[in-house]
Length: 342
Image 1 (spheres, helix red, strand yellow):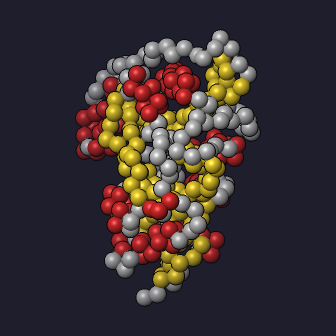
Image 2 (cartoon, one colour):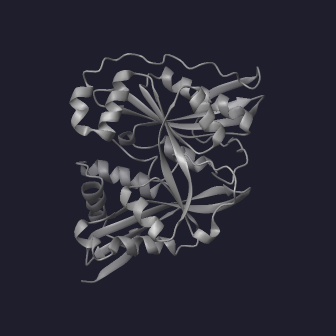
Image 3 (spheres, one colour):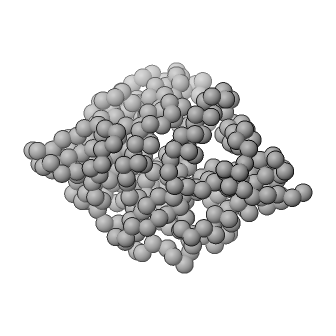
């Protein structure tokens, strides 16, 4: 048996759709839906690489990656985020999945992974990846019923039918007020093409946002839910930005995740986080989740009543080029995590 490793452009599109949509994601999508989603995910996003493993013409494994700018100790540098790492079960014993990851590890950019499947978390340390500090996960329960449904779906699928009997009791109607930095401050929905993006407080590592990325997320297919991007302005200058995603959890209402939030300086993080949470509650969501490694962001979430959940591990390759010591700003703006669907 001879396995060939090819770039996505040289693989049969129908075979790739079958591997990803049916085998990996296990979705019963129509062909138009699958085509439109993959065109957005792989064709419209910008920089990235996808490697496909093929047994003759059959696609049997795949690994994808986004290449995005990050701030690393004040320098802007390209960082790779791997995702969609999957291999058909009958080919795993042949090491196809491992070969796919090693090909990504041979790329020139450092690679960052946050969370991932149990397989990923077990394998990366064996491949000598460096372990970064864990990233905190938080949840705010707004509706008792939505929280019950969210927990049942993620931890006890058999209990979903019982969670439907939980009454829709509002646990939070609004958060405590966090004062804006000045009287001349405003929070508004970002418009497509807007290029006024705030700078970010200094971190050892943090993602660098650009207009193309933000516009791409704002135009995500409906199957992913709805992305809400907020711009915060203080005295006429960009002060903060947040990216959130709202999704319908059938039978339990709207859930949301704060994908990313950052401010121009640490003193504005509390306002940025609070304004984002208030906006989501005003839109009727029943639960809000957030991932944060920034100490100021984590403190702001805790002050708003978010509960801490099990943290997510973070990994870095190559191990001899780990980011410098200092606070990290790792959120859910990750190829795998920000793009999951229910």
